[in-house]
Image 1: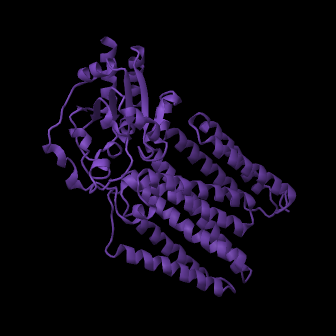
Image 2: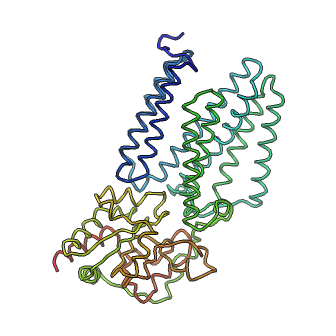
Image 3: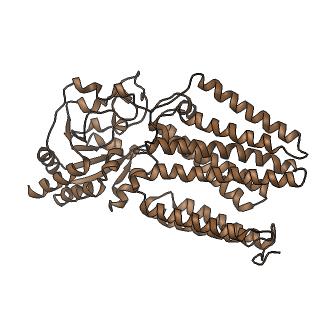
Amino acid sequence: MTPLAVLEPGGSAATALYIVSFVLFILGLKQGTHPTTAKRGNMIAAVGMAVAVVTTLLLDGMGNWGLIIIGLAAGSAIGAYASIKVKMTEMPQMVALYNGVGGGAVALIAWSEIRHGISFGEMPLEDLIPTLFAAIVGSVSFWGSNIAFAKLQEVIPTRPMAVPGQQFINAILGVGVIVVAIIIAINNEPPSQALFILILIAAAILGNLVVLPIGGADMPVVISLLNAFTGLSAAAAGFALQNVALIVAGTLVGSSGTILTMEMATAMNRSVSNILFSGFGGAPAAAAGSGEQRPVTSIGAQDAAIKLAYADTVVIVPGYGLAVAQAQHAVKEMANQLEKRGVTVNYAIHPVAGRMPGHMNVLLAEADVPYEQLKEMEEINPEMSRTDVAVVIGANDVTNPAAKNDPNSPIAGMPIIEVSEAGEVIVIKRSLSTGFAGIDNDLFYEPNTSMLFADAKAAATEIAAEIENL
């Protein structure tokens, strides 16, 4: 027994502590379903993870304490620095990166288990099969998440990038990985490390090739799906290691990621297979500004302030442009000035607005927008026809009437915030450029729409000042 080991693997004390940890995971997940309790839920889940980590470190058989301490210190320092320095606009790509790290860690654990099995001459199938599954899915998740991060960070183009024969190559790689895994399982005395490394390489190529053809607009769905993959691979690793906390935590991540993926796909009125294989979601360069020939109504901040100040009800529709401009505090100040004049202000939140689920909720919460003013799409749409002015700030595809009116549109059938039903619409945007779908927003050319061409933060600040001076 190592000096710090006080728990027997599989013993009642270790199992009890692991049960405590995953109970905290479940409670944290439950609390995270509502903005008012999400922060508390995150802390509860973090305590659960701390319990699981400490329990694992106290198990008999732990060694290499120098490397463990270095790893813990380095990981903690990087995580703390990132949580402080990363902007909210960069949070989606940070989620992708963290998810990738999880998948990569699982793949490395699987490799370690294979090497351990080789040293003993064989590996029981009940351990080998989940180990191979964890390696394949973890590697796909790691490399796919890195591509998602690079697209969101615009290190590589956000448009779909496919190679000739893309689907055929993916199919060959997928079948090849499964066949090699079966060969390793059959010839298990000992398992072949060379073939295992071949699996890791093939899965890495597959992870890259699956995500590269997917455009930036679909990255939130892809990240959620890859998150589910990481959870499933972690659960498989837990079976191989006979670690109940890893099994439960991985299953929770896998199931919640799958549910979220399906909900986002439903919000876009598309299937997951369509998202993965259609190449939708990247705006071709030629499409940008193609609608410049159609006439639009342009106004200034003073005109917008007058329209808003004399309204009874105003609905603000935030999008990724608000996040990029970091305009949430300025928008909140604009809303404050309207409320001082007795105007009712609400915010319409589309499920896929921004670059990750809840992106807009978090940004607005950062500006202390009351939670009760945040209205989901299903709740706000019936109210739009009774709304005097809708203000669209940086949202594009999620407000495009073409989704309802044009059956040939790439976004046909996608549920949208029906701002065109409002009495008047003010769109705050730098230009008439397209969204991620690569198509013009017909809303810009509606007779009840006025365009305020400006940076969202500057425009909101100016409008707030004008309202105050009325």
